[in-house]
Amino acid sequence: MIDMDVLLQKTSRTFALAIPLLPEPTRHQVSLAYLLFRIADTFEDATQWPASRQIETLRRFIVLLDREPAEAQGLAAECAGDPPLSHAGYQELLAQMPLVLEELAKCSPAASATIRRHVTRSAEGMIGFVQRMDGQRNLVLGSVPDLRDYCYAVAGVVGEMLTELYLLDRPTLQLFAGQLRERAAEFGEGLQLVNILKDAHGDAAEGRVYLPRAVPVREILDLAERDLERAAEFVELMQRGGAQRGLVAFNAFISGLATANLRILAERGLGAKLSRTDVARISAGVLEDLDGADASDGSDDTDEAITSPAVSVLL
Image 1 (cartoon, rainbow, N blue to C red):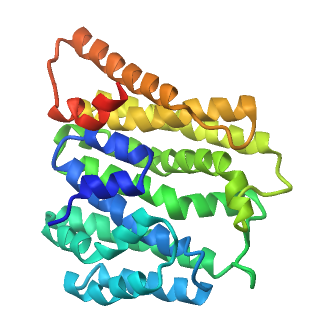
Image 2 (cartoon, rainbow, N blue to C red; image 1 turned 90 degrees about the vertical axis):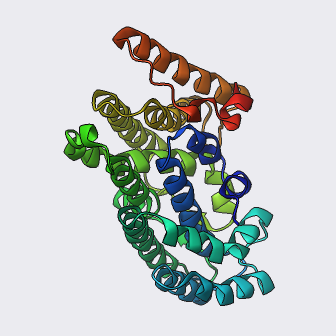
């Protein structure tokens, strides 16, 4: 039996806090999808392996997504014997890979197909960027289009997958499906750009220069700001489509965190990050705004997920 909440807490920052807001079955689906994307990310970031092994393992992982879960035991054992990274949480996740894939097999056909398709697309994109590393394992992106291609591979695809999961079995949201899909990749790009800006120094120390050196940081900040405006539109569309309170809260929370962090980055420079107090304040503000919206329209949609332990700790 796998405890996905524990694995999330050991391998995630923002998403471990936000996922408990989601209503079921979306919460389970998104938890599972996050762990699968994190496995792929771990192989992409495998600083203790040569690039050739990273590529080979990403390809093996793609194949395993459509195989019997037990077939992943061999890869899990190899990762235990020669870990790709020193991060203990990621090592534990790789050890649990067969059980994560077992959970994928238990999902509804529509959800599992959506998750498999998008994890595969992202992993294939990661392979392309690992192939571009030089002999010293350095990756340098040279232009804004290059940066956007990278963000799409690792985050835009995630935004598209999440949108498809939100739309499953929610007829009222289908009215806004086209508009949500138009904004999904930009939502993901905005989140990734904020991560890149706040982790720029650490990434560069490890040979990953995602910010094009010839491009002013202000230009990247402006791009992230435009993306997060689209993210705010995405949240508003979900509200207009009658999405459950927890579904709106999840998106409002991750969008709000990124927007607040972007503001700090603009003020303080690369590497600036939100404090725990900031995160708690934003979480409380999201729920307060939703309470106000519920009161104004007379609804009483109180998802159990809103009062989950992870959120209670924040508040």
